[in-house]
Length: 240
Image 1 (cartoon, rainbow, N blue to C red):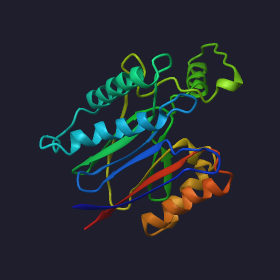
Image 2 (cartoon, helix red, strand yellow):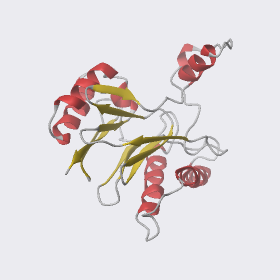
Image 3 (cartoon, rainbow, N blue to C red):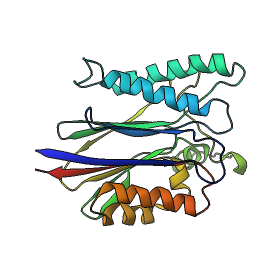
Image 4 (cartoon, rainbow, N blue to C red):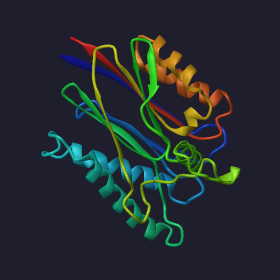
């Protein structure tokens, strides 16, 4: 039998005028994750808020306790955000990342679109479970397949998928079988651009409680300049 502890923190940072990050931390329905409104487009906060609300509406409904179709859920959220974008910004639209996981039994199922991330830690090992849907990362993967790909350095962080795009996004789904002692970190790029994976691993694994760990992670990203909103949700898996 497993039990769970979770903590979350978001910070506007030191540069942005608005916090366009949102997080999910529902310990009753066991849903955890983050959404990051797309910078450079209007309505980022509204896009992230609506995406989070659409996810939680499913899990909090009377029929939301079974095995949800996360791909269908994310694509439904995409349609809602795209429709809102037509009202708020007809010429450009609005967008957000969305990376979240739901716990059912001893399984964590993660749905992922964008460049927010989920990491998993177990017995001293700490790995990135998601791949960034960015121009730079897509080019790297295509080059690994032998393709010749070029991109402008200024566009390296531009998203290749987001919630709110006109066509249904491809959704990455990752399934993790849980064990006591596991730790999972969901975070936005305001964290990952300021703290390398090796340092995140140390911070996630060294604390006995999730709140001081996530406080230190987000706080460190801000102390290092805080150029973007920074948000983290940290989940500890315990045995009982």
